[in-house]
Image (cartoon, rainbow, N blue to C red):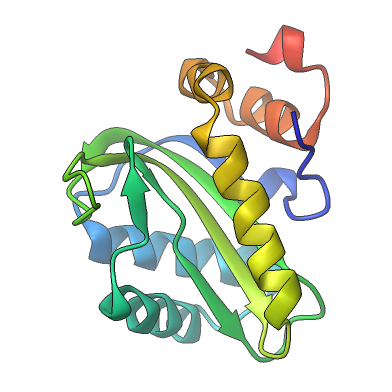
Length: 155
């Protein structure tokens, strides 16, 4: 499994998150971006919402990869949430989303942004990895799985 310790820190990974809809989800992601990465939460919410208006970032199978480019970042940063209950996301297959992998990239990170999106989508298309992710019961186990720690013990 690809290791995402270059994108994630433990505080940006959370299992069993309760949100009722996409708006609440984006607010939660904005709060995480503020608390963990020192970003302006309303700016993050605004950028994610703007990107979502171009088309849903839900790419099927209960997965969404909301993403945005922001000033003030030195490299691509991420957050992963497992939702307690799936939420409607206007995904291509209309399946409600329960796995969210947010990516925030520096404004000028064209190629790096696209390569990172491809890495994340490869991971989230792998049925074995998805089953492991969905089987996680704690934030620490989810982070260990995604960051390449002791994945056998974490899942």
